[in-house]
Length: 146
Image (cartoon, rainbow, N blue to C red; front, side, top):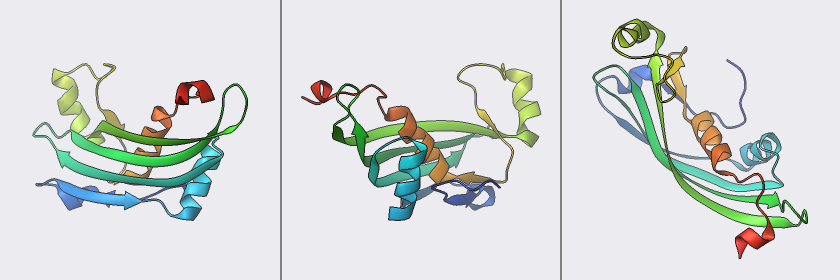
C-alpha cells in the first residue's frame, strides 16, 4: 500500500450487508501534506461525512459531502485567497471478483462505469482528497470571489 497524505481505511468486510456512515477529519499534518500535493498555499481544514454501501449488483457506492477551507494563490495577482468549499461527491467501485459478472451485462469501458477496486478496503481519506481536488478552480481570481 502506497502512503497517501490523508488515509482512512475501511475494510470491505465492515459493510457487506449494510451501509456504514463515517465522519472523517484531516489532522493539521495531513492538511499540510494535502496542501503540498494539491499545490495550495494552505489547507486549513478538511472534513467529510461519508456513506459506503453495496448495491445488489456488487457495486460499492461511496457518497458524501466534504467541507474544506483552503488558501490558494489568485490566478492573476498571486495574492492569497481564502476559499470555503462545500461539495457533495459520489464514487462507484467494483471488486475484481465481481467484474466478470458486471461485464456480462454492462460496458466496462463506459465513462460513468465503476472504477476497479483491486484491494479489500476503501481508503475514504483518499476518496475525499481526490474529490476535493476536483472542486478546486485552478484559475480562481480575486474578481471571482466578489
